[in-house]
Image 1 (cartoon, rainbow, N blue to C red):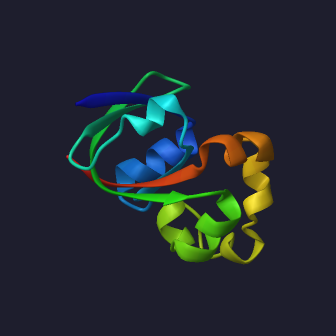
Image 2: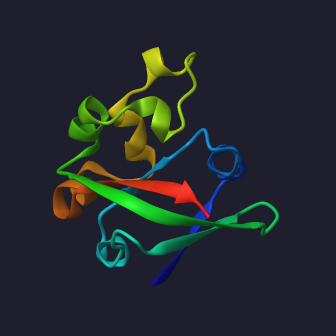
Image 3: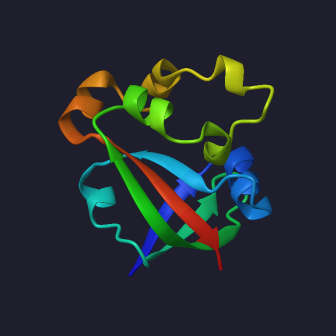
Length: 113
């Protein structure tokens, strides 16, 4: 199955270059349909470029705090300089604590096609 997700340019480029192999998302209804072996087509919000990846693994957690403690954050797109400042609370800009509690969160591990 092919899924579609939008990204800003920085994470799009990091996936394209192979530096980001885990995409962080809310485990909402749309993401619950994603399975290992599926493909995801990412679209760069700024210029519409497309990139297709295959889902290798799906890591499920109740919230980003638990995810940040368990997953290697450098695979989630953080540079070595950013790792010491990486905070699960920063994901609340995108996904509220209420939404995290309602749905849980995912680390979608991918590989380029």
